[in-house]
Amino acid sequence: MRLEDALPQDGSQKRKRRVGRGISAGQGASCGFGMRGQKSRSGSGTRPGFEGGQMPLYRRVPKLKHFPLINRREYTVINVSALAALVAETEVSLSSLIESGIVTSDDGPLKILGDGELTVALKVQAAAFTVSARTKIEAAGGSCEILS
Image 1: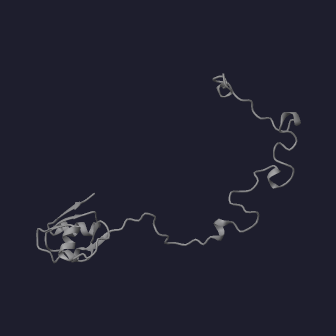
Image 2 (image 1 turned 180 degrees about the vertical axis):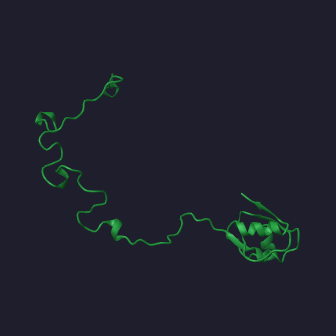
Image 3 (image 1 turned 30 degrees about the vertical axis):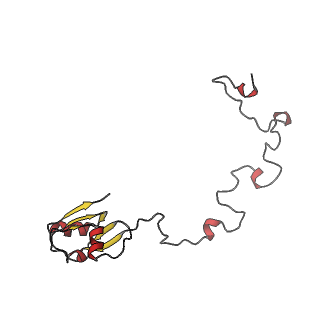
């Protein structure tokens, strides 16, 4: 038998620590709180964030709006008005827009925005659509397909 094999019985409970009951109890007199000071007195001590009277961190840091989103999703955006120059029943995707020269750079998945008018029916494949872009494409007789 080794020392690490010596475990308490199942269901046994450890005795509660009784503080302030003399030096033989192990936590007599000051009950483990030390001699003097704010943290030895009765009551809760200090609140979270308290720095001893110094202006605490949460009050001395400026509260600024418009912090950038972490892991923000970047899109290649294009308006519906740029799609109006295409021939009817064309399949529109990011690769086809780059080939035709409407989009010059691949900044991420394609997102269609709803600025402008559209009169030709197109089959548009994109990662995201705004609500106005989807309604304008479908009103012109086209279809919207969301790519994963």
